[in-house]
Length: 305
Image (spheres, rainbow, N blue to C red):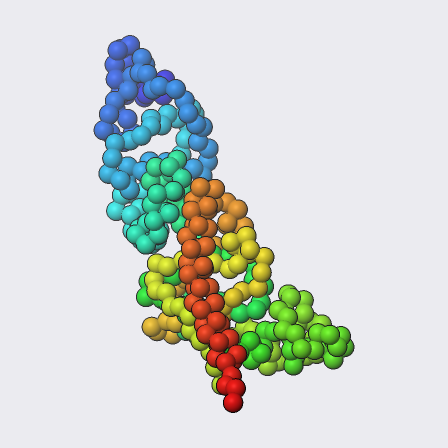
């Protein structure tokens, strides 16, 4: 009010009246010396963005912003702002459309603020067609995946575990104890460094390449679906599937959330996602167990003459 008074006095050569009102910078309302703005809820400092909610939602302002000192502001028009955030809005709508936990359990404090929507914790990752995201028998870091538009993945397993190069069998170090000779063991993260150099083994672990071995595809999911590594679901065990990206073109987009991002997610939302992941994982493993039972029956059946 004091700044507005000084400008009024300089412009007209007289101080303003006590009851006089002034138009706000935005120009849609007025203020005066006796204006009551309510309780102060937050201090905003340099680099802070404000006023974006009204541009996003076309709603009245949710708060009054008062300068506590002379300030320099950068103003962005609604059209320019919406063009800049178009990609972010599409990502939020995509998550809300396909994943019910994001619609029902997202942090309500966001109130539509783009910077607080949990989908923004996910990084956009470009993957190649045929790229392996997890490898059967290998331990993986915590990671949650959401398939982007037009992308899909296949959940694969070797029909014979002995054909899987991720297990130490014929590829074990020469110094391996004899009692481990006939036992399949999952590779630990450091085992590749201790084993004899084997470029074929390293390549097969990073890229799904059955080399003619029989592989079973147990599931295929499409855009908007979610899956995760075992460690992201608090299950410290090797990956049960080799998950392979299948893109309609050479590449596709998959949204990924690493361990640090998982820690930042709202607990209620994370719990809902883990419940969904557990249900999907149990459904796939039932298929595996059913097939293994069928194989056991076929192998164990003999005819006695």
